[in-house]
Picture 1 (tube, rainbow over the protein chains, first blue to last red):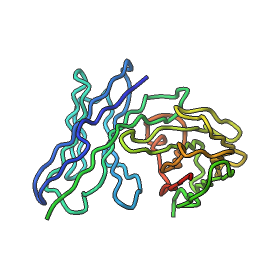
Picture 2: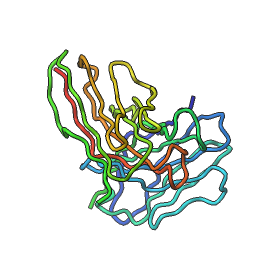
Picture 3: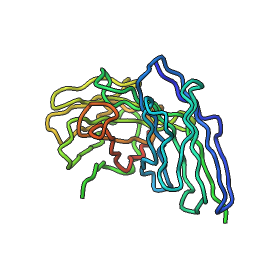
Length: 118
Length: 117
């Protein structure tokens, strides 16, 4: 079984600054995907960024980038130039790759609540 | 508009009163699943369905039932709700059950807040 740990229950950052959210995971799988989801107060789950474990290059999406360290089983999210709209709960999640018994099951961390201050 | 629709969005009920949370998707997705979200635990999968008439248990299935009679609908049934089922529930779907590829991207509904007194 997989586990995902987010050790920072809450964080805050000043608008326009950079913040990094931590995530570690434990798995015996070699092929998998990692995700960061954003959940604003509206409760909608929004996919922020996705990393394929077999790719060494870190994924980026505009102001969002990850630091993927496969050997250390670490997957942190960096948000640059933080904006007020980034205020949300952020979840790190793991998914085994390929057709498997649980299909597209995501294993989530407990979440990090991020507050962006003006 | 492509979407996953859940109803009701909010519900307060009492212990033992059967309830159903509906989920419908308009994207012709094969794969659908239910998660519950609890503070500090993130989201945990309750049940999933790879296709019509094919369902299976996730990590926390106790106290829940599902059915998949049609491709677009995947209702979550609580036969005898208990206070420990107070939670935020999400339905999600993807084009296929092939994990992680473009066809495996999960689309989430807006969540249903359930309180059992």
